[in-house]
Amino acid sequence: MKTQRRISFALAVLLFIASGCASANVDAPAARANTGCVDFYSTTDAELCWDVREAGGSDNDFRTLFSDVKPVRGDVLRLAFSPGHHRLRVTFLNRVILKPAEVDVVVENGKVTPVRVDLTGTGATTVLSKQTTMGGTPSGRGGRRTKISSEETVLFDISAVADAAVPYRPKEQMPYINQPK
Image (cartoon, rainbow, N blue to C red):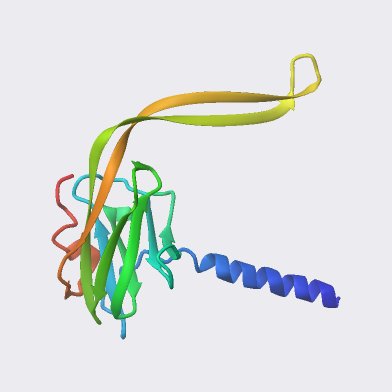
């Protein structure tokens, strides 16, 4: 019984830590106390699957703030931060990127700091994918099949620029929300 409680507690802690890896894409009607927001948006592409990380103690230590394989609704990702300086790394999960973009952002209490992220095509590359399936064969024996496919895709360079903080408004009221892509 004691072991079962320890296992249950360990699983609960693990689920709590795992859920902390993905920050919500916030869009409250008013600013929260002691909080500022950063809006990530792109004028060059839509339907992006964002991956945003924040620098920790060392240059190579980045913790995940937001990462989702589904595009965000409205094409603007809004994350809440405590006021102050933040070093962020931005990339996309559904584009082939040469190197993630890094940007320094100063977050102000009750304001939104827009970060414009631009993608520039720099050439083409081939993406190889490998899919292995297990199962029966026509002769009735177990087997394994591996399918390898290749696809040519665009290779992107990515840049991010933080603009000056503006008073808080819901995402749909921000001027960059309806810019043509």
